[in-house]
Length: 372
Image 1 (cartoon, rainbow, N blue to C red):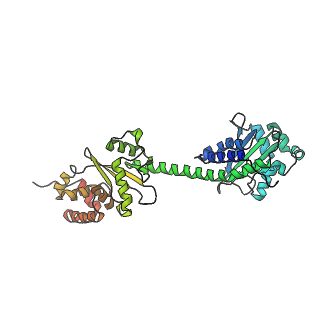
Image 2 (cartoon, one colour; image 1 turned 90 degrees about the vertical axis):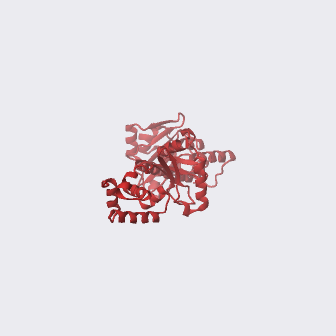
Image 3 (cartoon, rainbow, N blue to C red; image 1 turned 90 degrees about the horizontal axis):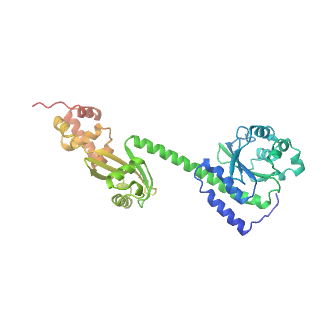
């Protein structure tokens, strides 16, 4: 390689603009769009992007027909089967890929680093493939973005060779392409996991919201949005921040610290109660809120309370135990400590003559008829 190429101020401006755009890509499936960004840095007739499983040997381009971006029209095309067959058959002659096989050096290399124009024209790879593609000059670089993924990018010209300034441009943006791809992969994985979590929680009849400590809603499930709309009379289009009451509750949680995170926000409406509680108690991180709507058990527990000889509070505790709630969850619902729930259960067991919550729940669901 020639030494000490320098970029002009305008070239630096183009480089910084391209780097900024690279980090705007938020999904690995969209990463091939970087070919258009690279064409703004380094003029080329077309560029190729190939994503494939990483290999210890020569990259297995066979079976991974690259996506080509024709820069003049911004069109995406794939090689014809005949040309692709010729490319795959003579791939072992490619000097850059052979160099990568030996060294795993992913930095930008030109064909002219290894062969002069006459030597290049003598290759079957040129005569069977590149001559038909109109390629006389080419520069390659590689992104080994993980143990399982290798990205190969090349830019192609029909006439003038790539300069050292072109190589420098690609060398400077290459680490940013690597980081941007990893960021996009992590973001896509996070969004997929979040979607699965929301789906699982909503199947249990609960909603989930991720918020900032200032009450800004970062993400919200459909069911959580409907609950906020119902209990706070919000417009679904304006649900970008928590309602003021919920914001004040969240501020109190932050001020009081970890010990206050078990205290839910409770709102009643038409015989139902909305409970908002923190799913994660990490003060340093953004809170995740869990929303649960429950029916007021006051009416439904009156009959079992009389039939079983329980107090109103004991009947409420047993109602939620029979619904499969833990002591901690019952404590949150009734706004009392889990230890108090345990004491109520001990009294309930004694009154019912049972020793387990399962037996008590069965009696609650099918109480004996009181003798008149």
